[in-house]
Amino acid sequence: MAAFSIRQQLFKYHKVIALSQGGTFTDYSKLVETIPAEKWAPLSEQLIGVILGAKNDQKMPNALANIILLHMKNGTASSKAGLLALLEAAVLLDAEKTVAALGELQMLKLAEKLVQQMYDGGLTKNAT
Amino acid sequence: MPLKFGIEFVPKEPYWKIAAYAIQAEKNGFNNLWITDHFGNRNVYVTLAAVAVYTNKITLGTGVTNPWLVNPVITAQAIGSLDELAPGRVVLGIGAGDKTTLEAVGVEMGKPLAAVKETIEIFRKMTAGETVAYQGEVFKIASAKFNFTINHRIPVYVGAQGPKMLEMAGKIGDGVLINASHPSDVEYAVKTINEGMKQAGKKPSDVDITAYTSFSVNEDMKKALKAASPVVAFIVAGSPASVLEKHGISPAKANEIGAALKAGDFGKAIGAVTPEMINAFSICGTPDMCIAHIAELRKIGISQFVVGSPVGPNVKTAIDLIGNKIIPQFKD
Image (tube, rainbow over all chains, first blue to last red; front, side, top):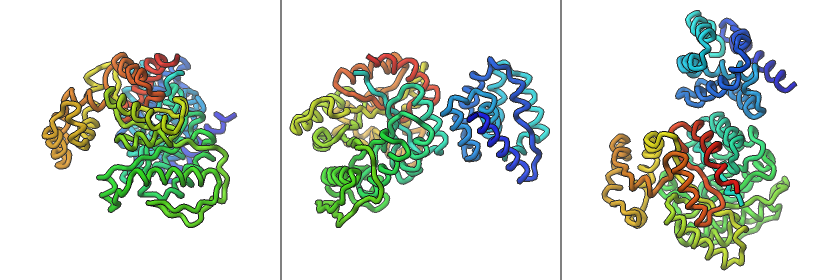
C-alpha cells in the first residue's frame, strides 16, 4: 500500500515537472519493467552509489530526494517503485556513471535504451 | 557490554545525502549519529530534523554545538523540539567551541568552562519544564519557560580535550566526547574523566565515554590514507605546540602546513602530512587495522567509538565495511 502510494506520488511528480517545463514525459517505469528481478537489489545499491557520489548534487530535486529517502527508510529501494526513483535521479545527476553501473551489472540492453533516450532528449527533458 | 558505534557527518553536503548515509548507518548497526555545528555549513538542527524523519532508532545529537552562538534557552528549545520528531533518541553534544571559528564572527570565548557548565544547567532545567531564573557568571536568564512539554530526559555529552574540561565532563556529563584518536591521548582523557566521576560519586556506567576520532577505512590502505590526509592536515595546523611535541611532530612543520592551507595550496599541505601525523591524529587503514586500534581504545575504557570525518574514501562503502566487518567484532 505504502509502495503504491509512493509510486503514485513519483508518477505525478514526473508528469507535473515534465509538462510544466514544456518537455515530453518519458515513462521510466517502462524501462524498469525490463529489469530482471535478480538485478533489483544490486542495481539499487549501484544507483544509490552513483547518486551519493555525484558532484553536482544541487541538481537533485528535493521532491525526488524525499521519495528516495522514504524508499531507503522503508526498505523498498530495490522495489520497482524504488528503482524508478533511483534511475531518474541517477540519470539526472550522473548519466555517464549510471550507464556504466548498468554495464557492470551486465544490463547492456537497459543501458542501450537509456543512451538512446538520452540522445533523443526524452530522459533529460523529464525532470530537469 | 557491547561497544557502541557512532558516526559523524558534516552538513557541508545537502540534507538528503546525510539522511541517506544516516539510513545506511542505522541499518548497519550504528547506535549514534553526530552532526557537526559550524556556521559555514548547513544548520545543525535542520539537518538533524531531516535525519530524524528518515530514521527509526539511531540516537541523534549535535557533535558538538557551543554556548556562544546560540543562547542556551534556544539550544534547549531546538533539542527539545527535535525530541518530538525522534522521541527518546536525542542527545545534546556541547563543547567550548573553536576559537578561530568564533573569532571569525566576532565572538569572544570568555570563561569556556563556566559557559559550558552554565549552558548545561540551563538546558537541563528548561528541558525539565522548569521556569528558569538564572544568574551565572556568563549567562543571565530573567524568567524563561517553554509552552510545550518535553517528555524525555535528554542526555548531555560534553566535548572535551583539555584537563579541566575533561574533569568537569566526568562530573556533570551523561557522556563525554573525547576529541582524540591516539591511545595515549585517550588514555589520559579517560583517567581525567574518571577523576571527575569519582568526585561526583558516579559509577562507570553513569557516563558514556566516547572516543570521537578522525577515521578512514578502506580495503586498500593507500586509499584510506589518501582520504585521511586532508583532515589530518587541518588537525595538525590547528593543534597547539604542546600537543604536537607530545607526538614527536615539529611545530615548524605544522606551521608550514598551516601556511599552505591558508594560502589555498591544499596539494602542498596534504603532501606535507607524514605517517607520524596520521598515526597521532587519526585511525586509518584496512578493517583489520582499524579493529586493532578500536580494541586498544576499548581496553582503555571507552564505551562508544565515533567514526568521524572522513569515514573513508567512499563514505557509502566505508559504512558498509564498518557494519559488516568492524561492528560485529565488538558485539560481546
